[in-house]
Image 1 (cartoon, rainbow over the protein chains, first blue to last red):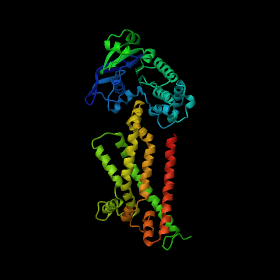
Image 2: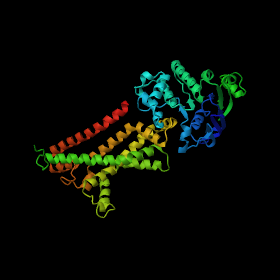
Image 3: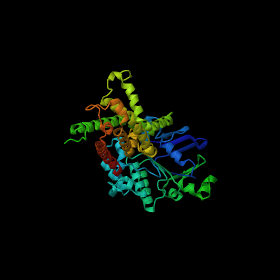
Image 4: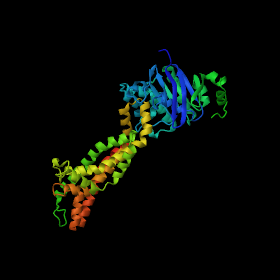
Amino acid sequence: MSGPVLEAAGICKSFGVKEVLKDLDLSMDRGELVALVGPSGSGKTTLLRILNGLTKPDIGQVSVMGEVLRFCNGSDLSVRRRMSYLSQKPVALRSTVWDNVAYPLRLRGFTDVDRRVSGALEHVSLMDMRDRPACTLSGGELQRMAFARATVYEPEILLLDEFTAHLDPYNITVLERAVKDYLEERGAVVMVTHNLFQAKRISSSAAFLFDGRIVEKGATASFFEYPEDERTLAFVNGEMVF
Amino acid sequence: MRLDRGGDLVESDLVNVVLLSIFVSTTATLLASAIGIPLGSIMGLRSFRGKEILRTVTYTLYGFPPVVAGLLVYMMVSSGGPLGSLGILFTPAAMILAQMVLVFPIVTGLTMSAVSEVAGDVKDTAMTLGADDWQTAITVMSEARIGIVSAIMVGFGRAIAEVGAVMIVGGNIKWHTRVLTTSIVLETRRGNFEYAMALGVVLLAVAMMVFYVLKRYQDGGVRA
């Protein structure tokens, strides 16, 4: 398929009198991992929720593989099922690790559940914990389980919201490796992060979200080495931009 | 073996009274739950106009006086009432209806609280993993099952311990509408205090048996 795999056009979103997103445009191609950076409150999480159909924009539209995402309409289910979203604080359903990972497959009526769940758990080194109640996992294990659950059905777009925040180096390494493996096989990734080192480490492009707009987007190397916008330059240099 | 202390209640009477108590209260709780759990889940999951008023009314009805509920049902099922043609006054059916009126708001309100508590995060998780509206609702209710089972337990507790409403609409007729609580009242009036107390112990034993079964299910939810 040619053209962007994910496209947001003219997105505006306000909460009360606060304008969070202002006429925002974002487009990404297959195989791209976009690191979305910016200060807290700049609208990164709101943008991810809109891209995933969880929050309805006031104005604008989202297209996935050329198909427009309709909000508050059951017919958008097929579009939503092509994406996955992993938050900073994933929720463990009240069941075992295995059943948690099998959950999205059962929603879709997959028949090869065992094979897929085994593969997903081995990928994040959790196979030996398959029968443990998910609520007993540590923070890092829980995030790895949530990653397996979010990718077990092979979504074409993966939305990550600070998915390694507060994790130790081992868990970060496992998850970043899993993201890279996913990207080799599947579509595209949008990753919200406050960790600029992580953005440099694994993203193919980076975008700076500030004051409700994408100020600048470019290939990761040039984004961090030669930013065009002075606000981006200040941000990547660690100055207090807010 | 005679179990009475001067009254006319014997062993076979006691079995009948216990079985009728279990039947009436269990049926009332199940019927109230069949309506209250879906309604409470909708109220916990959805935002709609008038939700706050509905929530306040539901909570207020927690304190609905049983005698008023009994009077209300009495007026409905008596010959001149809207349900008079059913001819269920002074039958177990009327007692079930009266207990349902008392149990329904409790099950509804507590289910709403249980679902509200988990709704936000679980709903988002289910939706992002590809659940449709129906699958999302089922997932949220499943995650709230400990609270929902608690709602059923509290509802059953209200039903099995209730006396005023079933006395009014049942009439405490021997072999027909006499249950444990109305028997206790009768024996107390007769001065058979020890026997009334023994019936109270039987009542608690019945409640404990039902709660044990529900608790087993609830603990299964915790472990899983």
